[in-house]
Length: 286
Image 1 (tube, rainbow, N blue to C red):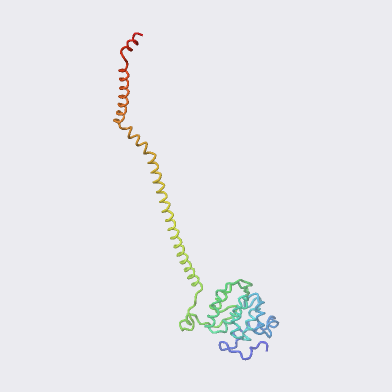
Image 2: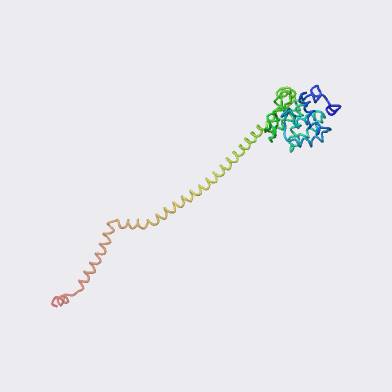
């Protein structure tokens, strides 16, 4: 009775939900110790605690032993929780292994349109996941795990049901075109770059205009200083030039000298005429 599907469960892809797991792997899960000790009488609410304790994902390892992740997946197929509960599982971002378990179950049981609408937003989750398989432990990422669910036929040693291609659903009008997060980021960057270039060009033009204004005032001050220096130089040189002009004229020189000599001669002549002949004789006799 513990391995039977709950009463009233709906058939998935025309068969019992537990039959989505291969018979060999399903029987190994039934015989595992974890299934017998921890998966007995689990509900959609109590299963959360078990999923939080999971430390890795994977199918079978070692001597064909199933992982805890695979046991809980079969338990979900057995109890078949409601869609609202699974959506809440996906929203629990802090519990990545619970989220990965819900994504795996949605991929196996939901319609193709619902699978794309619910799982594609999870491609932006880049957290690390530990995976265990026959070769041992390995490291993967959450977005890679989701991409494998959407594109590959076998994940965690489980053959996935056939999934219609997204292009076909878009052509039929069942789903809208996919919004690429990378394209949005590139457009956002280009817009930011254009805004930045515009702001830079504006700031550059403003700075240039300011520099031009400063340069104009500087040139004006320079021209004023140069004109002032020229004026000062011209003012200092003007008396020398006037002197040189006056002295360079030979007529003026001779005129001034002739006048001075004529005056001295006239004085000498007047002085000589004023001396009487008697005094001249006295002087000569003496």
